[in-house]
Length: 194
Image (cartoon, rainbow, N blue to C red; front, side, top):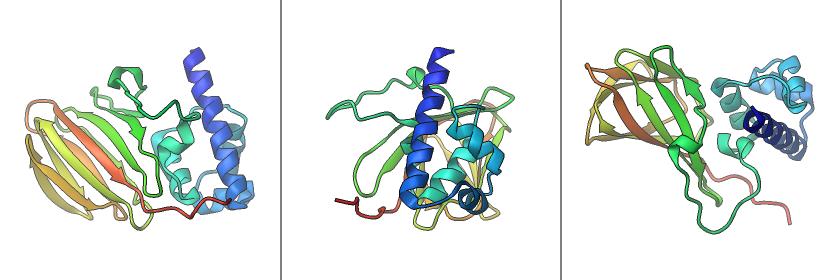
């Protein structure tokens, strides 16, 4: 429970800081991200429990990664993250889950996710900002990747990549659990102020 409260305080601080850097009022961030002003006020006060869709909308609107909203200060040159040390960002009714393991630093960050999709369970994703590219590498089982309404089967040992600025869905296929590593390649952000 203390871990969750600490994570929520970190998100609250990071959202407020990113909103301030972007010069956006709560009203304007609400309008652009399609997240209610009340939810934003609560989030900036470290109250509530924002879901993955809300964090993605805020990150896209603010031009930063989801993990930039969730991570505290850097811990050093090498970072090792165990999947079970990171709370799932999304869980499905059948046991599916998505964990954001880390985001690389630099002008064009990459998010690294670990997913487990149970058969016939799916996660529909809203389109991301222009320039986002996603890659999924299936390491066990099979999934159906739906991009802009077209279904693509991706099986164990296969990798697919696509532009993330269109509606897309990840669905477990077949009879066994699908395990995959997903990377989200974010477009370069503006140069930091000096």
